[in-house]
Image 1 (cartoon, rainbow, N blue to C red):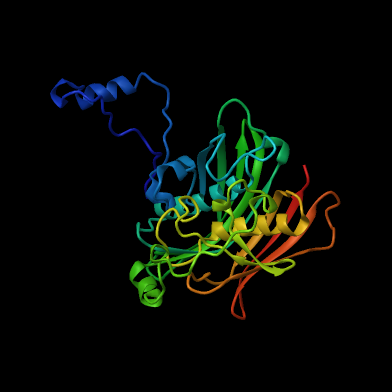
Image 2 (cartoon, one colour):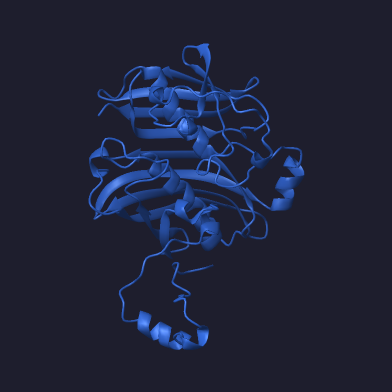
Length: 328
């Protein structure tokens, strides 16, 4: 088990090595500073770009309890501010990254293993998401409630819950579950599937960005098909955030963004996601059309609007999400 936080391991001053500080002197110099913040290694959260890493440290409390820290930037190329608040999907991505981080550092899953997310849920406190004069620094308590191991002890799957706080105030809660497998097993099962860097399907025209709460057509993940409440998933495999690295399926975060955009297109106004509960029943393949449908559910939350979004390929449902949204 790796029981440490990400730490500064080297410094570069741009001067010849013989003129630079000796490592012992460097360590002594750093000891005079308060704890320094950096991101966790990007490989631990399955990201290629360091800029997309939200987690900054982890500390085990027990075999199943962890303290994780994170930072949300005040402005992001994709998770843009919403009415002066952090994008609620930051919470979803933070929860996703936590699962990968703890699998590798807390349960010894080797890098390179493949992960399959089965469900993810989050709920935010809108008044605690207001953007202030500095990035949000989060303390996150994580409890692994179900730990499934293979014969021999290797991790097979994990279910975990997280509470995200800033300055002691709860910002969001949520959880997820996933299974993981060795790369050779995954490759044997999916060797025939195209990767995102192979452009498996032509890119279709987007909905107007303003119809789905976006400013750029590049960020739109739905295409019109001329039917109310029904769209074609638009998976732009060149997108630097949604497709951060080559994969053989549509990432789950693309489906979560499709949920938000479908709710916006259905309701005709920008919904502020307060909570979402999503299930991933099978991979969304890159080489087959994926249909996204949305319908409003009966009002059970008073001030909230609830929308059910599903995604299908052929006759098989692969994803569903129940989104509760407020109108700010």
